[in-house]
Figure 1 (cartoon, rainbow, N blue to C red):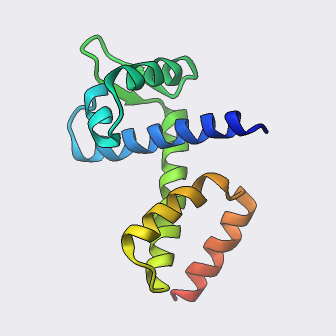
Figure 2: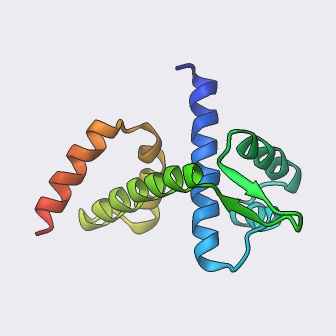
Length: 128
């Protein structure tokens, strides 16, 4: 996989994770909410939403409310699980929470499913 394709997939995952988290805090999620959360411009988010819709990850209502499809929700929850587990683990090791979150955000995109499951088993076993 080339660098630009990897960055594109990372961006998709970040948007989906953001939509998931916003949907847990807000009754309805709009593009402006995503732009404000990520610090991106509204036009950039609009283009991203068109791409996510074309890939079948989201639907957009007539009123502009964004909902994750079942596929989008599964991917978003997977990314969020990786982020949460890795971040909490790093904090438990003594890493500053802000640094842990930033590092987990990088790691969540690059770790293979096989390696993540092994790390997850190890962390959960350790925390028992």
